[in-house]
Figure 1 (cartoon, rainbow, N blue to C red):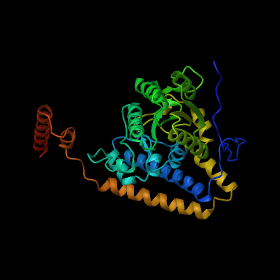
Figure 2 (figure 1 turned 120 degrees about the vertical axis):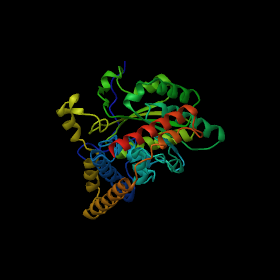
Figure 3 (figure 1 turned 90 degrees about the vertical axis):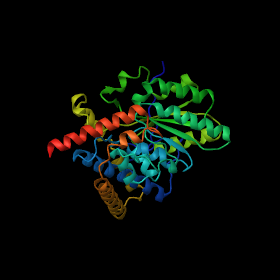
Length: 359
């Protein structure tokens, strides 16, 4: 069995350029600044989402803290016509693609219109079932292939999703038909409370690509430039008819799996501290400072934008009225089924009776 392949890295944890020569890190200064800004804004909004949940405004939220470089880098290099198939943790992906914080807030608020407008940005609605979006991405890629389009689809997956049958089927189907699809796996080390070493018997997730007959790449998921370069290469390969790619972005979930989770019950504090020292935003800032791109003016501009977007998100969530209970039933099918109608009417009657008792 082959040994573990070291992830591709263009910027070391201390912010210094690495010796990696295959991939290009020389991006325009404005692009470097935009990547940094996108990462910082993602984290700030992530913090605001967690605050809103803790204050009872959202029932649940899945934080992406620590995974900003993977999400921003992998999305920033794509065309706006490339289709994205996210899971539920892709805040950075949504922001880079131009989906507004209020739109994302409505989604986590659980309103019927949560997710409306996503497809206008070539982004599928989020997928809560683990791994099913992989099949959707392959189907869309095969459709583009048959229509003669040169778009690429990207399935965003977690390490836990690679243990699901749907993902195996998606990888196999994409490889057999050489579909223009990229599988971007954010290996954040934990599938809720299950560590990655209890999910993968082989050296890495990326090396599974050999079994499917596709390209496999392992990249430092805390290095935004490396994620940008590796995804750009995979997208170009797919667009040229070279088939799919499996990318494993090695990163870390710094927070809980969701806001209902307590990671201290299964995760060692020393492990979290080890990864905190590899913070993707700190690394990028140090690199930009060395390249003469980071300035206090840039930092102030980023902070101002982040605060404005946090305010817009909070205002949108707080001003959103509570959902009418009928929404749970009336928006499942185009025409409500008799069984659902009976359940709806029974619940409305029960709630009305409770209201009378309280009065």
